[in-house]
Length: 458
Ligand SMILES: Nc1ncnc2c1ncn2[C@@H]1O[C@H](COP(=O)(O)OP(=O)(O)OP(=O)(O)O)[C@@H](O)[C@H]1O
Ligand SMILES: [Mg+2]
Image (cartoon, rainbow, N blue to C red; front, side, top):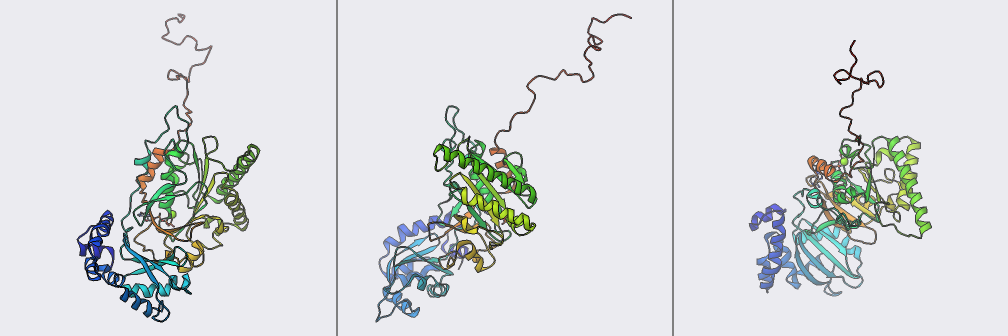
């Protein structure tokens, strides 16, 4: 049963109503229900079979035995706790001695658990050693698109005149840029400074909205000169062209000019690293003098697969240098691509943040998030075509994935972002008043123009 069906059944509303419903159920209904029957009766219809099994240890053990996860002779896994969540139910389970995480996270086991609980999907992720969290998914909290509020929330943020311009003074945390929402309703905050970011997704999966959301979230810092955006738009400039010469410090649409831009970025990065070495700086914190360089590449395949052999090699070399050395020097690459294969994105392993939107094949999830990612909950191939911008985010140093939806950035919102956050352009207007300038006036010959009152009579 999907979200809408259940909400109609329970008389609730969609969107934020899901979260309100869940909080009500969590705090009010469950606390007053004590017996397994009461708990089951109080559960929303779509979760009643699951509540019936979870509220009664006898039923849980029957399920474990049926799925070969426990046995009356060898013992049963222990359900430590279970809680309603915005997406359904989370169950914390202590595994049975001798079991391994893969026994629970395999696609087969998760499918069997989903059938037994009578819910559409179950994902299992390792939490503490010997513990696993089962996530029973009945509601999708990310079905409604969320329009960006980048301009509304950031337009007024400007450092006071006497204040030094820093990311804090303009209200931007470069390590937590709001770019969407997570499925528990919390903001999706993206670490930009210190990361290299890969965005992979089939055509129409919402890669553009992720890129625009990042730019919108960084807006006040771009306007203040703390972030320079280098935009590579090999699809011809249709999508990002409105920011050319305004929001972006560099903008390239063809392979030659983009490779030239990347080469210049590498040169500036290397100069910056030399300056840092000389001054003993190990990690650069962006300032107006040394801004964060955000190199955005929309559809990297144009450079890695559809260019000439020499150009492909050059792209591989330059992107490899930026990705491997950029971190300390506040140089961040954000690369979007449709096909996440190694051929399309060489140096794929150098991205520390990976965003997998809707992908066509299960194998592509592993290309983005690594082997076993599907078993750990990242199911990019199961994301609906109806929810562009939805994806799974994985970061170096964490094993789990966050399910998120990027803000929806309409064409009008893109224009508003460009208008609100483009840094002031140098004023090239004449400083002298030339309004009385007469282009036909010849000094000497025309010193006494007719009507001046001092002409000589013939
Ligand atoms: N986060 C979002 N929320 C709601 N709608 C979205 C979102 N992202 C994208 N869309 C819608 O989906 C359509 C495709 O999005 P987008 O152009 O960003 O996809 P893409 O992955 O960049 O596609 P392509 O590979 O063709 O460039 C857009 O018309 C947009 O209206
Ligand atoms: Mg696109």
